[in-house]
Amino acid sequence: MYEYKLYDGSFYLAGYVIELAFKARICKILGTDYPESGEISRSYKTHKLDNLLKLSGLYTSFDHDINQNAALKVSWSVVKSWSEASRYSPKGTNSQQDVRDLIEAIEHPDHGILTWLKKKW
Image (cartoon, rainbow, N blue to C red; front, top):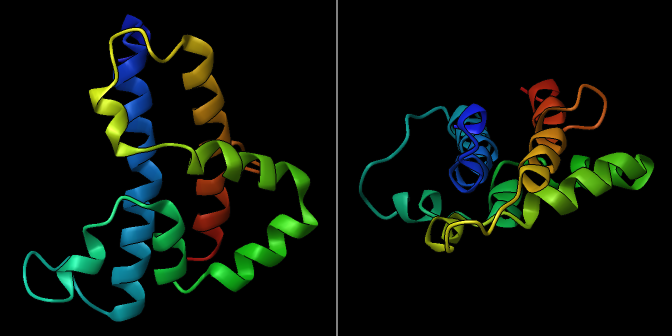
């Protein structure tokens, strides 16, 4: 999408990378597949990255690391500002730079949120 200058869609989908990574981590620590139904499935159905971080069991480690790494803290501030509600934003809401900033915050090799998360798997 990004190559075709569809920045709103790119922004929207990029945020799901982190959401799904946290949900995969939660499944791993619980030793279960993604629950499609039932009471526990409600916890999984959130899009709130702060809540998913806590449910992933990584909050304490992450809090420590962002206090030691200012660039990681900046990346988190960019990533946690993402919302699934961006799919409803008017066309042209997100610029190329917005998408670049989000992708950088997600996958930077030294301070990307996904990079950090992969080290905890």
